Length: 166
Image 1 (cartoon, helix red, strand yellow):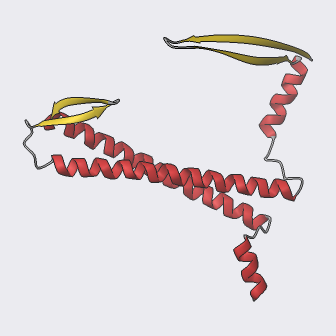
Image 2 (spheres, rainbow, N blue to C red; image 1 turned 135 degrees about the vertical axis):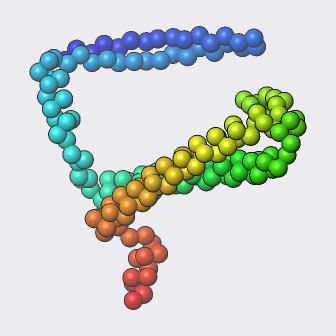
Image 3 (cartoon, rainbow, N blue to C red; image 1 turned 90 degrees about the horizontal axis):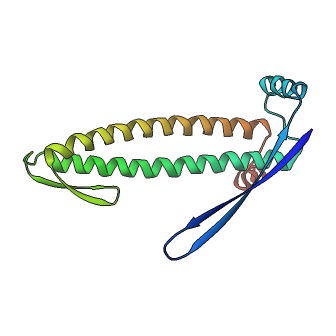
């Protein structure tokens, strides 16, 4: 197997300072026989079983962390969706020719209610779809985590203490 290492430097210049960043890349060339073996093994490879207790717990913690990330994203997007709903409810009864201001990319833009309201409705509809997708992903991740926990008989401290009291 032949290994090649390349170093690339990128220079960022700004008005007040300059920053140099070096990036090291390594490339490995495989023979065609090794490539075929890799392709065949990766296609038929199932998730490998953990070798010890630390790997089991590490995987469980990783799944818990992924769930927490999904919950945080879901909460943030639900808050955005609720803000869009409030804006829509506020703008709906107003005169369509009334001025409305909208924040676009950090810039406040003056429009009319007639121009802003359809965009707000469209964005809220998109947020509804994203919220639904995140909920489905979260449900799948919760089921996956629960299955992992049951498969390896993982118990939290609270569960272990409750079992000891009985």
